[in-house]
Image (cartoon, rainbow, N blue to C red; front, side):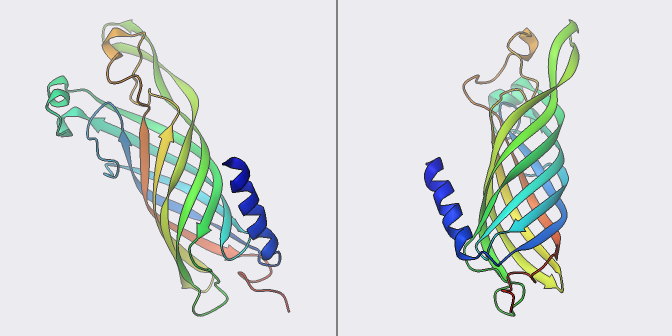
Length: 226
């Protein structure tokens, strides 16, 4: 699967070798966690995420991207529709620092140098490193010692990007994150009071919001030099 993905990426890149442009901007999103506490909706923003984004457009179909996102995630069993969770009544708040890199595939050609190719839906796939806090130990009943931890996630999602005016463009984007950990909610099997949920299901989190970018570089966005 990975070999096929790389082959397709290189193939598309070789077709449009002259189409290069940079984009840099900001992201503002709602965030939500999906795991062993609170609601079980995959898209239900209840907190915020802000960040920076950079894109390098290989051609009108493919853009490489890198992002840094700071986010708060939280959940409360009182908001769940699951009666067992309501009775348990756990809640938590955590912060995430996410560094992600990956690729966007445009459904149609996106060319800001024209009047007609200035919008397109797209899909995204990234690999991310995340830093967050975990409950490392319990110094006394109900009092925990926290420390930072680094893990990984796989962001993927859908978006729709469009030109606003001049060099400015925007995108509406929804992205899910599957993580390789089960402790974003401070779950810890070595601490009895924090040993909860299903240990076979890792945590998820999601961002849904808007990206605002400024395009620059030569040649002009997707324009082949004359």
